[in-house]
Image (cartoon, rainbow, N blue to C red; front, side, top):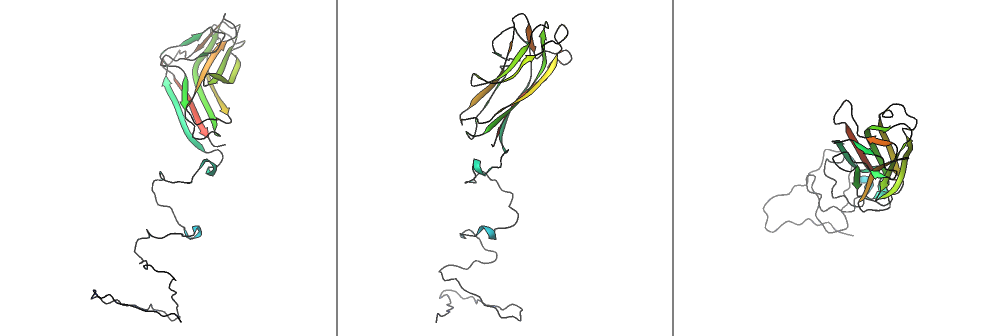
Length: 227
C-alpha cells in the first residue's frame, strides 16, 4: 500500500492548516502520480502544458494576434479579404489620345497604375476602377479600355465605348468597372494598369475631363481574396 507523508520544512516556523469545507458528503482527493508543485487558486499557470482544447472555454482576452503561428491560407474561409491597396487622387489635367494601340492613362499626377504584393500564389485579385469625364469625338468611332498586368493585356473591359454616341464630345460619362483574376500566380510585387486606345486615328478618346468640378476624384483599388 502506498503511503501519504506530510513533511514539514526544517527552516520554517509557520503552521500550515488543512481545513475541511462545510459539507456532509465524503470527498476523496486523488494526488497525481508525479513530482511537482500544487497550483494555488490565484497562482500562475505559466508552467501548465497539454491542456485539452475542450477544456479551454470562454471569451478570448483583447490581445494582439501578431505572433500567432499555424494560421495559414488554408485556414481562411473562401472569400476572405487578405489585403487591399487603393489609389485615390484628383486629376490635374485631361488625357486625350488618338492612338490605335494601347497607351496607359495619365491624369496629370501620374500613370494610372497600382502595385500589389500577394501573400499567396493561389489568391484571386479583384480590381475596381472609377474614371470620370470619359468621351470620344467626333462620333464615328469607339474607345477600347484594357487592364494590363506586368505590361501585358489581362482583360479587355470594353472595346465599343462611346460608339454611335451623340454630340460634339460623344456624350461624357463616368466610367466604372471591375475585373477578376482567378489565380495571381506569384508572391512578388505585380503592377496593374489601365490603358486605352481608339479604333481609328480620326477620333479622340478623352479621359479625366471636367465641366463642373475642376478636380474630380478617381479611384483604383486592388483586393487579394482567398479562393
